[in-house]
Amino acid sequence: MPVAVRDHTRMASPETPSRFLRKPAVVARVGMSGVTIWRLQKRGDFPQSIRISPGAVAWREADVEAWIAARVAEAGR
Image (cartoon, rainbow, N blue to C red):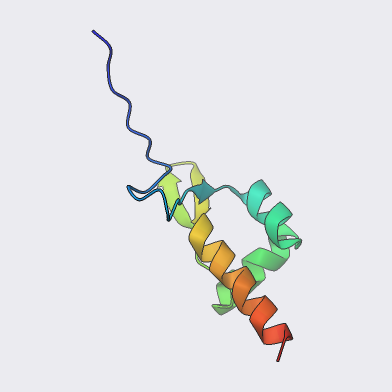
């Protein structure tokens, strides 16, 4: 009998997909080094990472995308 596997990377609504991004993906998405991201996060100027397992942290994709959108909006002022 097949076992159902739940996809924990997506929310229930297909209109608002969400997933976790690991550090290399965040670095590539925002174009900053990991150290710069860490400094911004420490100052409260970047979304906080989430511990997803004992040896791994990640960021919510929606949080990173919102941060990027806010920077774009701020630059357009």
